[in-house]
Length: 279
Ligand code: LIP
View 1: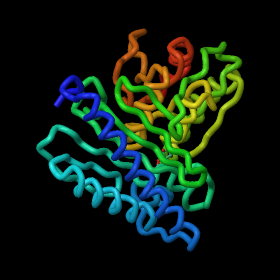
View 2: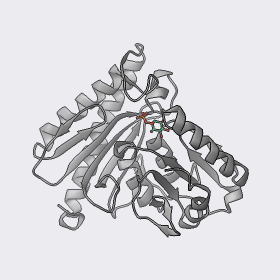
View 3: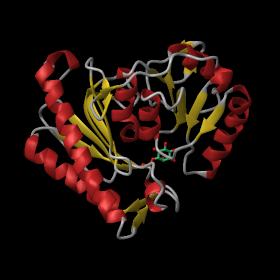
View 4: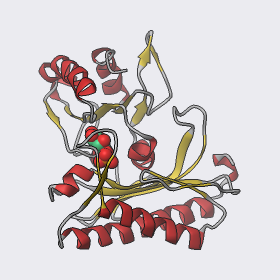
């Protein structure tokens, strides 16, 4: 399945379903959080946790998608990996910003992306429709390819490019101490050259904040496809350039390769030389 094979009504149907399931799962995990939080497991490190909320959200989303789109494939951060025959793969981050959820901080979200295969993307998937729901603010970000991006139905547009020294930049850090040390070294190069840094704890939230003009650019290394699949489409549909690391001056078109950078094209170009160590 490629993007050109999808009609306007296909794209709007996929977007509406992504919006509905993201909001349903987000509402559930917010209600669950008010009763407390339970860590179910740890993954790549003792602080890379999965809560019962992550698992419940993924179960809710998968159940709804199987009802409405039974021939689609599904890939979820918490273990879902269902084959499909339609050419559409749903890529889910049931709670992006799990650490924020654990500490009852506001910036956690549910990310749901309807994707097609695309080898120009580092993990082989590109979203054609998607939604990111932030339960604590009831903000529903969504987009469909070529149809723009919205926040609660209102059209989104990124900020005009500012000089790097006046740009508010978001980034994030991995779970391994070795990776965080390298990311901190790169931050030493970036911080003196920009307006300021923000670290929300959720890649999906950061890319949606970029789309909404709350940030000027975002970069992060080591993301997984579910972290960025829906939100990079939302950012792109709001006018952002989203790409990977520069290789010998060439901007790779593979977002999500060790490094993802998003923002106005000029800002992305200005940021790239500062980020070579983020492999
Ligand atoms: C999070 C990412 C965030 C990154 C965090 C974490 P999770 O995903 O969205 O950008 O900086 O370390 O990886 O683990 O909350 O789904």
